[in-house]
Image (tube, rainbow, N blue to C red; front, side, top):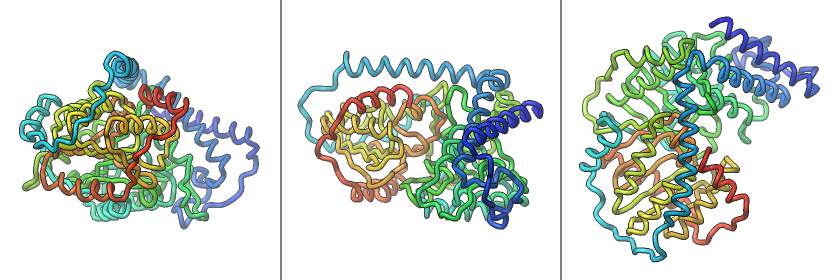
Length: 500
């Protein structure tokens, strides 16, 4: 363990030094305020982070480490994970291409005439939940959900819960950025680690990419740490592990669990964009369902450790713990796993079952089968509406979204552009809500690890409809005319459908 870790860190250091030399950054200037960061000025991971050359150099080093771990370390210590990642990525990409050919050539979209909106009675939710038991292969848990929309609501509750934790704080996130908001959360975790068990699980590629770009609103005088892993660990008792990314598969789940009794689940990473700039949502969850979220986090933590797949197995065979909770309603945890795309299968089935309405808000919209089924739903009279951000953060997906928008408009689906960047991942199908970390794209539906929560509880679904969808329909601009297209949109759509 120690030898391999040293070799990986040496590789990172070597790559960093070489790039510093290549970029001409032979003289490092500038100081980090140790009172601001709480870390000695001599620590190179926290010095001179404002230098673009240093940031790029460190990024190259981290990318090199991730590459070495994927191809030299993981095949031995995570053989099952590596094999399933390769097989899943290959089969699902090939399958996506075949489905694209079937949908767009052999099975054209339904006829030209559009049915009027039927406003039929919604699907029977009791029957639907029983069918979901068969579709997913297990019954729902129970608990309670409260929706936290935008950064003010979520980060305020997150910090309150960290401060009040009595036993443990377990963070699992795709990106733990190195901006001022992330450092504030990190400092709070470092402080609490002296009193409670604090662990942080990061995705290697996600955090690497996130820390290379700073939000436009970042204060000019802020000095960013180069490594959030080192920043969290140094001078504290925080335990940090980083998920490897076999063949670019990622852990896109965002969950923070407090004392095994309270969980935050949804789409927000730890960073300034999520706190101040983007429209996004998390769920505050209590009840026995938190035990399932905790169990999944424990398995992911075990796999990210030295024992790899064996560590995951050891966590899986531990007896589950169910939090004490009075009341609540059925809540179903859905996953995207290398061998099982539950979120995809459940939402496809819901689209096919819907009779009255389908409301979706998502930043990335590229799956052809989802699109085909939405068009079929609209043509049988279902009110289908989709909210997409007007200013997306991903150029390739923005182009692909343009092609999707035109397809939806051509077949009577109402499309709304939310001003700015909306990172929301939510859908309601005739009273069944599915919300979490998964986008409507190939990476989330078939490749990355994802977690959504789903429920048919009338009060909870109504809260989502009023607090999110009704508000966002009113705040968005409905599109009536097709978007001008060129060859780039077509290329982006093909790439997005296969691998993004």
